[in-house]
Length: 354
Ligand SMILES: *Cc1c(COP(=O)(O)O)cnc(C)c1O
Image (cartoon, rainbow, N blue to C red; front, side, top):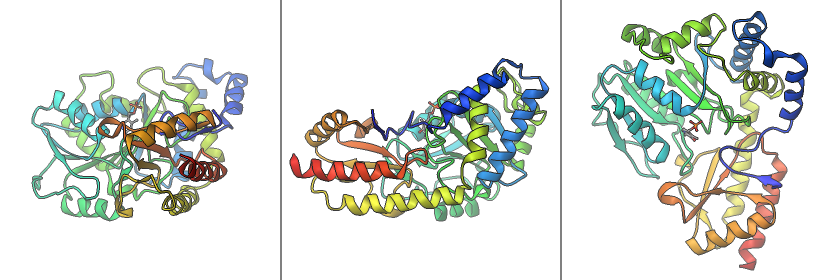
């Protein structure tokens, strides 16, 4: 596979091979997670994340295993009785379902692809609003303008964002959310097996009030360890090391995001020349900047996947209800600009031929 555009697990930064080698040589992978060496690694990784991703200094960063685990941690430790889940796709829906196993009263509010969710039915005193910043299954994202509206309308609620396919690509206004999380095998361009949670001081206060401590991954326990630059179990030290070296070497998020937006603009401009494919989401306001979703007849999608594979292009299958009639294309920072030129040329050729 020459050109990997799969939206997760996704293309890994090629530099990661060298970072792995370095980790082996340094012996860090063999040190225990209470050692000074590990504490130093954990502490510098958090500082680098804050400086490269422009995260406010008063947000705490904890490291866990997956975005799925974050769904469970949020349900256990940040919700007393009931949360509201706003979603238009498969990942947001799964988050809602997992939460309902723990809090049966939690409510689902679904919405369409080309619209913002309606907020009218949500209680002013809602404990927590659960939103998927970037819905990987259909290539939609919530605009910053909408995020501001949510913050203004629910000043006392915790706001949690699943940012698994946007964190490290988008430049966020972090203050608009209290909990942001992502696993690293998508937009971060790292191997699978770790997730990050960025948490505001308000969310930390709320977790203290709720005081849930029944689980190995109760947030209060995770945080207590993290404040001491340790973890609640032996962590994925290799991935923390890779993240550390990656954050040393990437540009600041605002430059990274600029480049992604330019690529998106070019991509959709070229796409408008294709007869058979169109964006699943038509309005730019609702389109993701990091996952593109293209729609066509099922026959054309099948044919495209066949030919693409032969030519070395790995495209993402459609997901859930859009499985047969869409493809997904990651616009993640680890994928070089030149890949998009190749992909556009390929799609133009395909469109003429078939
Ligand atoms: C992939 C994905 C998940 C699940 O991530 P895991 O690391 O497999 O737990 C959750 N939410 C979104 C938006 C995703 O794209």
